[in-house]
Length: 250
Image (cartoon, rainbow, N blue to C red; front, side):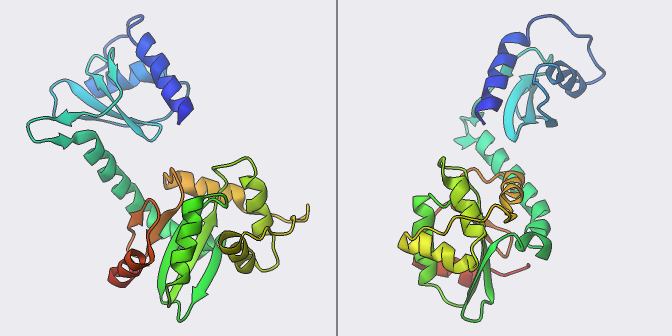
């Protein structure tokens, strides 16, 4: 995200330098002006906003705003003062919901779940997917919540995003002979796993790529079997309530 912000800041300063022949539509003109300034970042979409002559540009998983000439760009929240609405936040949530809906069949497929650490408690009928970093304090609290939950299957994708040694711990945990026991031993009891053999093939890269496609920006991130997500920790009572009320479609 730091690289994205740096690219945008650079683009803001150089957009006004030089001219460009006007394209047939404002969207085409904006795309033509921006594509040469964003160092290869993909423009995912351009659409009108409620503000006259102001367009929303989706790039690098973020929203920015550009005028129809393609010369001026704004980065930040677009507010509807009359109705006390944060239009940027609402639009971001809408786009995330649409992206999640498209990604859920992939997330819940057998081909994807084989790369998760699987925990089955009781009959395992209720299901959830979690993204966790082995050094994440709130992830460890979430594991304590899960300890108090029955009749659930938990698929955990371990992603090293927080600390320098997260990658080693992630690999050591995946390469353990009993992954689930090793994971619980570390997350609940602080017992480090044995060092992985050099010959072990881990799935860290695949899990990281999946988290990026889902725009997981922090851990823990919880996905329920109705396609909804919760970005963060849930205490036992709220987790139980969420699992109980979820109408599974996956």
